[in-house]
Image (cartoon, rainbow, N blue to C red):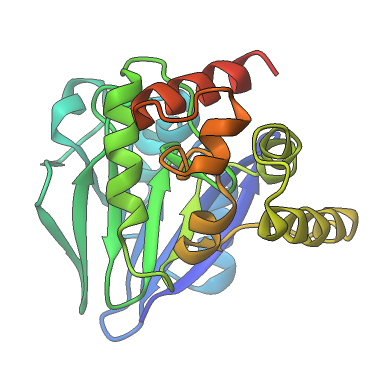
Length: 254
């Protein structure tokens, strides 16, 4: 299994440290900034050996070079975006695997938020590091991709085992739910999640990780092929890509 530690940084980012205990190898996922990562690794007595980047945005790769300089770690990232990943050593594409000691990650190419975005699924550890493709009750903005690309990407992640833990890169859940109830207002699971999230945030606790099972139930972007969400945006009977595009358009203007 992986020992996963969550490091909140900036206003709403999460960086993750993931240690494989048998080997002692440690990966940092999407380091926005270096200092909190190096400090937490030192506190834990962990030696950082890898960085795993999901995409090129500065709040995911900003710490790459400083962490590499301090630790000598190897940087793993998306092959389609290798030219935009600082210090990359190992570019990986769709279907590739990456071994962190005894734990193997499968790489998914999930464009939409960016043109080169990837996600890492550690099947044995039941852990998905999905960057900004999938959020709890939401998904990333379409900065470089199309609605069709993002819908296909999200369906791939939706098909993972229901007990998969979703380690996304931002604490957006409460604001995502405020929007979600406007397009899926009769969803009892969503209303229950709304109450749970309000309590967590009031207590200063994170809402992440989520699970694939929970996201299938509450996330309107994963539910664009349901009658409820299609009706909620006035597109009953339409193609799910059209429904997804309308949900995304509404969220962008919410």
